[in-house]
Image 1: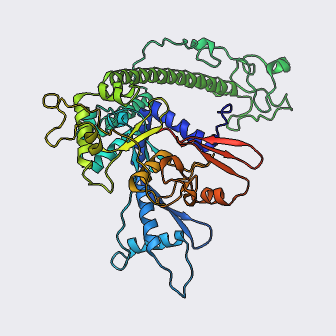
Image 2: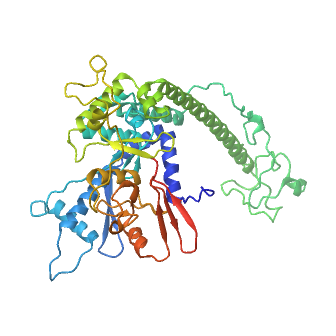
Image 3: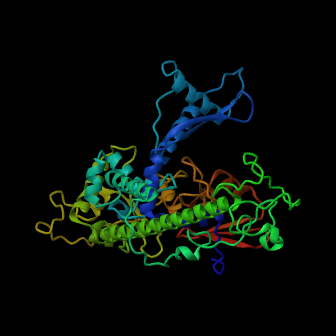
Length: 513
């Protein structure tokens, strides 16, 4: 990137890293998603000043996107009173939410329609690990599949069975139960004591304080070391191996007092001295250390067992049609590797949604297999038109059609639009190609209305075409026309070169699709 003067912001690099991690760690992402779905909820906490509070809603990304988009549309329909205070969009969104929840029968807010843009590759739809996008935000592959099936009215369990994906809800529940049982058995010490192929633990006599091991002197407050005392403080009763504390009358430096319950000149009962208590404490510590070592051995074996089970599950899935789809180099390879049931499921998905049951029927992006650049943007009817000869009675079946397709127009990006505003097809193509602001380093979304800029001004003869249009956010669109000394050069393939007033250049390309 440095040699080619490409600009990559930390946010862009982070998005790329998250995409790669999500694809390589799809199984763990599915487990985290399953756990997070159980933690959905609403909480409230004090906020900013006395009398204010923040309500936090934890839900799925598509639900949050839809909720936010609906509130934005509601807020845009609210008009401030002529004599009242002027409210921001955020304040109107709060008022609209309260009206919809607390006063549902009194509100005059019009119904709104929310448009969510879901992007998923053919491999993802067929059961692969590549993540999808919802309004430009990364979502796990399983969520992208579930959303597509929900929009098409599919049964999610039947879809999971057809695509061969191993992370449907039933298997997630079974896996979670297996891990819970394994954890319970590890903590309870119920697993069998199998031979440990790793480093063998040390024997008990190699651990200080183990049962039966002779322990050196341990310091006690106010008790001198045995070698520092004279013969009057050693021996059978007061030595290191004795059962009574040193004679405090002859050792004024010690602060250990004799047991007040014992009469003077009376030996303490066996096992009740300081050294006996210390010996018992050392033995207890050795036993605890031995038990901890055994528990660690159990845990280590359990982890190895879980790793082997996970590897076996991964190997089985890699050999399945979904696993072969996941390793396919491109969409054609994924379709070839898919099972018949998976291809039928994909065709049924496109059939159900191609008739306009959604706000906008799904579009199929054909991209360059090497660069990822968007070529045409079509749909299922467009594919059928391009793959047939055009005769009313012909459906391009091998047994019925042998017509030449050389003269057919094929698939290509939309042509120019007459007028300043791009047509629907061109507008859709440009937003799918750019997705985010094209200014180097910017990650803001291209607004739904406007902000498709003519590189060569329309008033100067610039065409309203894909080669002359680029998407910007509102602020960067304004700065392009108002900031002095900056130059923007747009190539026909969509590559944008920005030159600063000091002569530095930065190049951005449309993101790979």
